[in-house]
Image 1 (cartoon, rainbow, N blue to C red):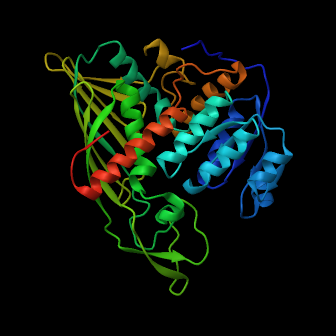
Image 2: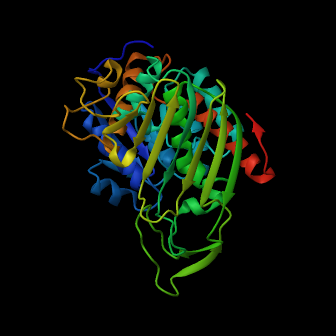
Length: 387
């Protein structure tokens, strides 16, 4: 991996397409880098009102107008999953670098085409698998690389949320036309699986999946509801719609070193707002990280006392220290992961090249699409599927 600059001299112009919860987060964290101007946004609903609220100069209703009328260095795609392919393709055909929310597309074939075009045009292409940049999750990777765990035996954990707990909760992700065939695993399970392969350097070779949809219908409001809004419709303000995507998934994995793994994914786990757990057992020691206590890493040992490593760049691995922004005792969390991800992406845009980046690129995005495809096949056929 080439050395990334801590300071970027070039100023960049960026556009954000899709301005719900996550699009606004992109805008906020891009500004923290100091050398990136979000010159415009695009959104189908009230674009100029949203631009004004977020202090962005211009709002467009159509993403093509944004790309055609602004001299952009990069676009950030934060729209529903079924639009990622066409927007990314249009941007790259205009020579613009792309940062895309996960999942990359709704089909493996679309992901393959996007990766081929990005490579052909030598553009920087990136996914927002931001969880790689929690400092203590990154520290796990450094400890694995330094052989502090020994041979990895097992990995377990999961990702739990409750924002779709009630049948009155509704969001576009419940519609397979917008989200694709998978919902919970594509939305949050993909984060867990990307992080596990990133931390361990191992690759999944086989999967066995169990899916279930507990709410067979949801009440769809007759007006749009934002992600995590918790808005319950009043009687008569909704349509009852069938649900064909999973609320819950448990998946078993075999990895290429012989290790076994499992995860539980749920968007209906009452009380858990956004909890990811990654636990790794090796021949020397074990690690346990919980995103609800994201600045702490538990280290387990058989022959001496266990320990709790608390985020402090002065005592972390050098690689981890480089992706922390604050000294010990100063908490870093969800927004900071975006900042660190974007910092590396834009350093590569400035350098005009990307060599084995820490951030997820379209190769990683395609990898997750392939894994999701096999997981869906396993859930349908109720058997182990080779990746």
